[in-house]
Image (cartoon, rainbow, N blue to C red; front, top):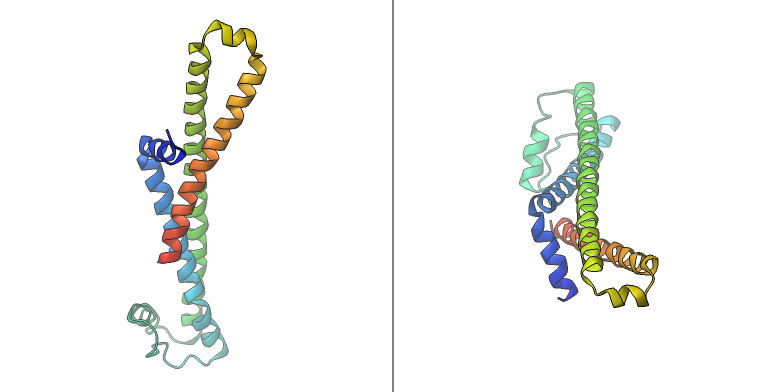
Length: 168
């Protein structure tokens, strides 16, 4: 089995976990983008140079988004925008934390499953193999390979998530 096949096989075992990792990573990026997009208008409102937040060069979705603040004036507009940025930052951190929890749980499940397979492999080999090799060396080598394999799976998921975030 090639390493790519192994990675995809392990990902297919728990697709919901991988899907949740991707969704929460993407959500964190969206919240980060919203808070970043609001920084310039907040500075403009704070400095009193806001004018109309609708600018012809901006995408239409941003114009619709900024039109939410048109019903507020001066200080109220600034407070609402800062509040929205703080909410976006809180939501971004919450989704990143949830993503970390799910990723840790997935990684733990992956490593435990591979360790169980490694122990089963040790039990299935011939007695002659155990006589020629020390059990501690075998267990250490299997543990190292399991950690490398789990790291490869985590890296593949991280690469996929980063690709999605870059392309959006």
